[in-house]
Length: 287
Image: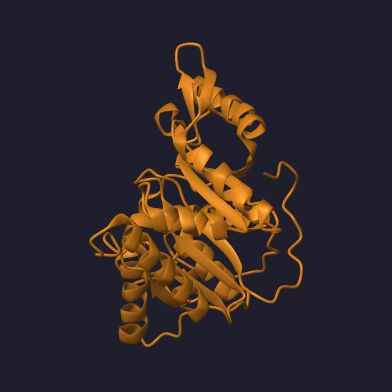
């Protein structure tokens, strides 16, 4: 993996693929995928969104809500081209894996004209998720800022705050990375973002920060700032909006300050990935 600063993205003949993944639910994968997709759209890129969690379908419903809101409000909102990959119902494992491989290939072919494809993965060890990780030029892994959630990256001796071994998920990422390298492709640029950060300087927070630095060196990923814990992220889902869609000119000063801070977090994530940012076009607050 890459410990260096965010890489330069060379001219490409196929989309740059960003996979948002880990094998745990509730870490903000769909929120991250949605904000990345909209941010890239607003920067002028052609963006495809791919939802591999067809059963839960959070990203798909988020985008449906966005299209409905834009239509009812008479707004023109940037919306990525969207595809889903259904789970195979074939009777055998071999047949199901073959079918899901074809589903993913067809969906990516449909998005082949895009500059970027952002893939949202299920919070489980699914075959199609492993296939998607092998496709990742950049892998973004959101984790909540707690010792419990660090377990998705590595097994920790919590009493001594020591790393015991990489997790099954980390081993899976290594395996998919090795497939890329053996195929002559660039290694996965793995970025782990600490989500739901608090603004309180606490001993627990400092310990987590130190442990994550150690893990970055041992496991092989780069650290990126994530999103703070804000109710606004959950509220925006119903309207399909992101923080980048909200007008900064609001009479609610505390809300405005929170929105601006969240937008800075999104810009920081884009820069961590290696994408230059520009001011987002303001639209409107949700009704």
